[in-house]
Image (tube, rainbow, N blue to C red):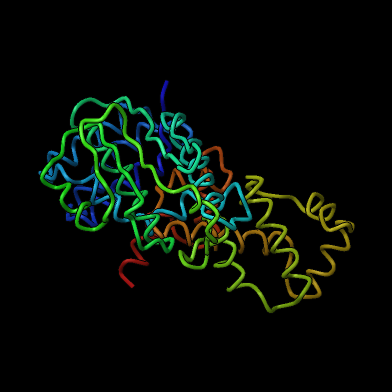
Length: 337
């Protein structure tokens, strides 16, 4: 079965809201497809139906271009998880392709090739018909052209864009924004550009890119650092276990081994700093969960899964123990504030 990560669906809804969709409508759609998710993924058919529903409700056949223009906002979702070092444009492109293939199994045939002096970005062959196929093609071309622009490329006269679909009225937006040569009714959708650009330096700072784990680590460390150097070290190890190893509740013995000490020494030194091990762990988990819930990027079920909980009910009970609120109550409280 061809699947798409739930996060990709959330991006589509966020882009729809930015493009004019009513927020309450977007929440309704979100609830519908998240309920059909299994381990953070939904069938391609669910995503396609989401796209069709957005089309119908907004009456916007040009949404592929609109979504693609939001590339700066969605890039952190695709860069940072796999390649810690990104020096060139080629590094960045390959990282995006890897991440998109991992999150959307139907993207497996999107590719970057170098043929003599040309680099070729080929669109994945999507299993969508008519309006959806056109949407995916517009999204692919718009995303990549805006990516190149944000990466610092200013002249597009060496770019050629080949589209399978015929030219539509809204494609004038692309032609006005980029002085590339566009070809319509082609056998495939691809972007062809000078291969020398692949060696251009890629500045991560230009996009202010951080992966979600990095953002969460920073958010927690900003609120916990300073009590003592030892506590800071323990918190960093806890974050590593929770965010990268998906261990919902790392125990003191395992944490002590990671820090090359004994569990008793770990507990004693934390006590000297005014913490018990469990109290510090709960504090870190509460900060992580709160940050995710406040971001509204994920449902409660998705937050639970992201933090390593296999059961959403256990997460709800744990969160109430940590904060005094259920996840839903906490979100309402923060919104009211």
